Image: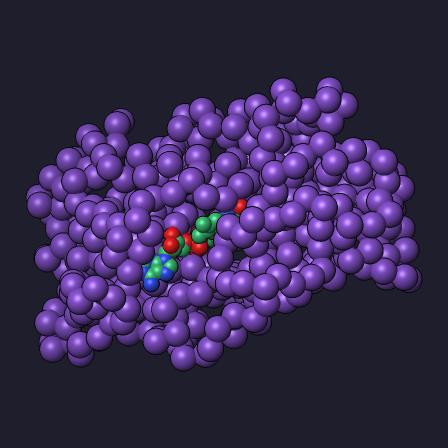
Length: 425
Ligand SMILES: Cc1cc2nc3c(=O)[nH]c(=O)nc-3n(C[C@H](O)[C@H](O)[C@H](O)COP(=O)(O)OP(=O)(O)OC[C@H]3O[C@@H](n4cnc5c(N)ncnc54)[C@H](O)[C@@H]3O)c2cc1C
């Protein structure tokens, strides 16, 4: 069934029986931020039968960014949303994940992906350009009549109004944009990323802190690389105080390479798109093995972002309070060392859609958002903690490094597979 048809049918069913509505009035959802999380949230809420108005501060929905990995837990959500073909048209589906020593080039461990991981978890492991994932969510959204997307709309602050009766009607959220415009709705989703303004107002817990790691990213057509540097697998090169991850995107036609090193840059730490000097990266790579050096030297154009962190979530109150829910990086920023930043944002969105679509006629919106928060926070915290731990393991030096390499040789696939994660929420 096409999405437009689905939308019309869903509306007819709601009118006929009121079955999937939170109240007899369609809830009006305000979404702050139009990154992967914001678009996914808007899509999930629209599928649940709500009206959605999204505010993105950028002048246009942009192409910035590089590769993103999607485990079977995330691909399952996209398939469930009817986006299987759209994903297959732009993603790559690597056949294995190989871990190598950045120093010697030796293979440390392998996780078979491809059909094997699909058989194990029911869904494939995909790698995709951030712009392609963003684009497919955006295209899916445009088929929903109840979604209004606004660019050049930076959110400044919100005001929550108390519920006036037990049904939850009467209360609401007012959103104030930096240019003076206002909007009102039944609930607000703060999907405004790592440096979220919505979070700052809701939790008042300060800004994320740079962790002392820089991410150099590059995207190159595979055809521009020498044959021995082209690759259709995920490779993680682990070295002392650094690691490099490479994988195919865009149906395998492009190679995404990201080098993580220790360091700092002058300038705006909130900027995802610093220009980067290839010579600095090459210097930071130090004495790495020849195949890795060849790869890094084959690429001249790099961009850079600064990794910033928060401690893992402590409880559901960090994911929602009253009529405001946080989603994606706004709720649980994570270093990309478990490759689940976009994934957890998409899982959050699916969970939010589920509670809004549930038979919540007797529940108030704050209670529904608590259900969402309870469903999500512990898993998000676990992924955040595991990603931070991976950073230490990947960049290990001395005895810890030897221990890592020995256990990877011994346990191989059992160390690299993450069933509790890939099985989904
Ligand atoms: C430009 C950019 C490039 C990225 N590149 C990569 C990459 O190459 N690799 C990788 O692993 N991850 C990258 N990420 C991060 C990755 O997309 C996220 O970690 C993950 O997808 C979770 O998404 P999110 O929607 O929670 O946050 P984000 O993707 O950060 O999206 C947040 C959105 O909110 C908007 N926003 C912020 N403040 C406001 C405001 N006050 N009002 C309205 N809108 C606001 C931002 O412009 C952005 O569009 C990038 C993020 C951005 C914004």
